[in-house]
Length: 113
Length: 112
Image (tube, rainbow over all chains, first blue to last red; front, side):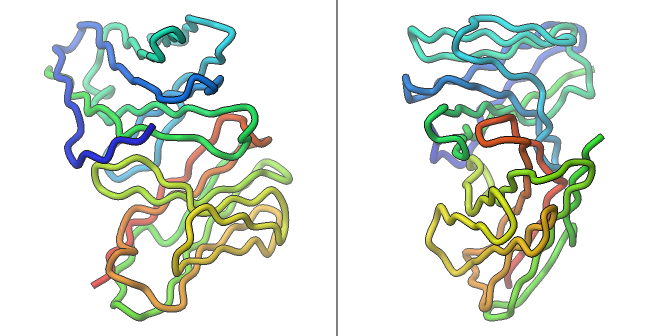
């Protein structure tokens, strides 16, 4: 669900290290999840998605893990690069509410060269 | 490939003035279209969505309205802006309800 906080969680990593960004969702009925990347002043960019019938999905340098038992989602970025610096947030959707996604406030990732 | 455009990119308007933000999608037909507002440090808030021409659903009661005069055009309007309308407005599209949504570049609105 949404956080009402005004300060984003932050994560700083060294260039070349792996990053793990976490997201907790609120509704056990959610069955579709998306990770977005948002650079400052730009619209969110789709990274990767996963449906509830899977617990892991891999893309290019990114992996999403889904733990339905504890309602937790994570995004792993391998060999983090300076261009990965952005805010990352997850979105949860439910099949019975086709047009409604619930977005988290996000985590601000800073990659240190 | 599909692209989504929004304009203007930035806008500064006085309180009480009207608003018109435009969103267009290219490369697809009959998309589902969405308007979101993103306030600083907060998640995206769905304002309106549309499954077809002339079909608008409102998620949050407010002084904003939306229209879809053409298949790939979505407009966000207000007759009189409030200070609280300031924010980053994002348009998005999806091929079908419940599919992944793709966002436009956004409009930064500042109401003074």
